[in-house]
Length: 400
Image 1: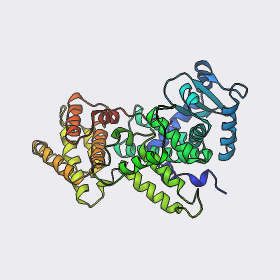
Image 2: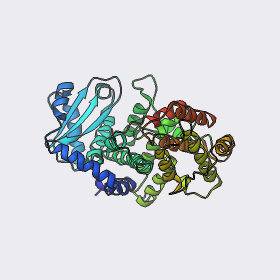
Image 3: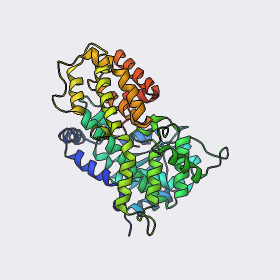
Image 4: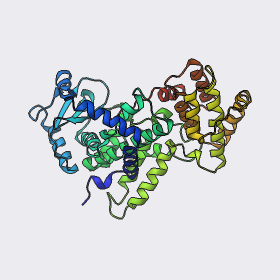
């Protein structure tokens, strides 16, 4: 029998366990637990005051969907459903309080998603609870007073993406209909509904397959910031769900579970800084660009700070930064390294370098105007848009 625990993404489990052992994560969790001991956070009180709780009498179909999803996923905690006014399609699972779990939906989503699509969204949100994703307080860790090291930050972002993969699978397990899942993802990605556009799953997936090709033009179909976010319904997630539905977890004689996880890991590798270890010419060009770009950006405002040196060494190793570096010479060779990376690496890979430069720039909790300008200039030369840079410098860190 297929259970919810069997479909959880392997990398979600591995990174979740690794992060829970990390000293900084344990410290923040202990701090939050001490705060919780002082009394309830008042989440339910705020929900009752600012949104509408949907009873069985008010929304029998939605309550029936919730009951079916909780049964499929083996969830026994009482679930309260709330709706709030919003023109955007949004949903969220709020950490339990006083023995109740809270699921929130925007009014637009409830009005414009059909039953199959709602099953997917409901299951996705319940999946976050089921897999204990709220046990890692990613928002506090990334945006709190004491920012994590670049290495820990990258692990948190990577885990968050795999957490979304697991939640997507929980949603698909509830929906039991890939057509509805694809249609729901299409609506969330496009903002469209109704009869203006006729949805075609085959055409939608064809677009995604083309975007994921190894061709250097593979990333031209959508804004790159969507690929690297913690939780939007991106092409990577749709492709990962297609793989899931073609696996033996869903269909007889489908792709083996081990192969599914390997392919998902490869797919998600587009969002990982694996070029730091790779021996290919493209990876070497990316490392050289990251090296010169990091020096250039860090030196763009009052010299290179101690925190920026620490961030630099998180990528290149301990004691890799030398006071003897000829900073001006390194900055002078930056354009050559940009051009070399453009020749050897794909657009998606160049975008990874920009993302990692943003991580280094944020190391001292402040991005000066000069640093921002330098980042944007490098991004422009790599054909990476300004919205992506701004998104990386002010990242939304909450799980939906």
